[in-house]
Image (cartoon, rainbow, N blue to C red; front, side):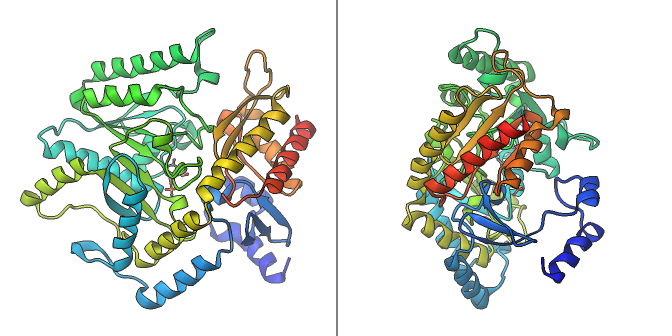
Length: 454
Ligand SMILES: Cc1ncc(COP(=O)(O)O)c(C=O)c1O
């Protein structure tokens, strides 16, 4: 480690409060310093290369070290390093990017609102749902349904939607506008002998009961990740989204697809919703939009919703919501080039093909493994469910920290996977550029580590 990096590593805990991190662990062990990245690999402070099978935080879809993104960032910065988009100010890049996104997006998405991250995209869509209903004379429709084990962000509103207890503990959260429903995970949530179809029907019946009990006139929207990422890589049973969509439409409740992880190729299609027969009214995206190179989000909505906002604007004037960095010219330029890379290099198709290879390898290695109960996911996202007992589907006790222990061993072998402690799962979501030999390297490291640690 160079002296500079060593000093900075020591200084870190003295000056930084890290997001979603243990302060005591930082004080004991220091930070995990990463200093460079190329392709699917990052280099740590000691100069060791690691295969990043998480793609940063589920976002480096185009891989590290992309010259094209560096060049466009420089070019756009020199041309227009910043200008706001309030009061109808605009820039050419945001218009081109909106056009491109609407061309790719499913289900009649018709307008885009830009922000800086996934939490603000979801926060924006909560406010748009409220505004939409209020403008239509239904101001009582303020509550939002979200699922157990959902992850929608950590701002005050989105941490409330998030259904992972750790994000609420010792905060006055969740706020009471949130209504919680069951996580659609058959493996962990089904009753004994309940088929996938029966499980699906029970979940939909529970949501119907909740709507009847609380009153459709109090509910604005239902937020759902097509595949729940941080909650354990969970895909609902077949038929769930079409049934949910009908129920919500019948009750004038908007369906929001949180595609912050699933969007931009992760599942082997541009967006998760069409793949899972979900017909959202609005979509939140971020992360893969710029492959993480620039903090950027895009929230999209159907024409009917924008039309209500337009009519509202006749009496209200401004749509009073926005961020300093909405429609950032440099961020939009980076996103445009990133989408071009995904297209020109067929990375979405590649995610489908190499994703199928990844899942095949994981299934072959772990099908009969006594410590692995389920392999989940699609495309280049996968969850490996650790179990104490396969037969009874007993999950490990969170206090035993199995996912963290396995991830540490995998890391010792030169590969990064993400532990999801509350659900006893290891998450994998590499750059979409990952090769088959890198997938083999990842699966080998995972198998050896599980065998070593558990
Ligand atoms: C599905 C989903 N939604 C929203 C977010 C929040 O995004 P951000 O951390 O950019 O605010 C995340 C972050 O991981 C996410 O996974």
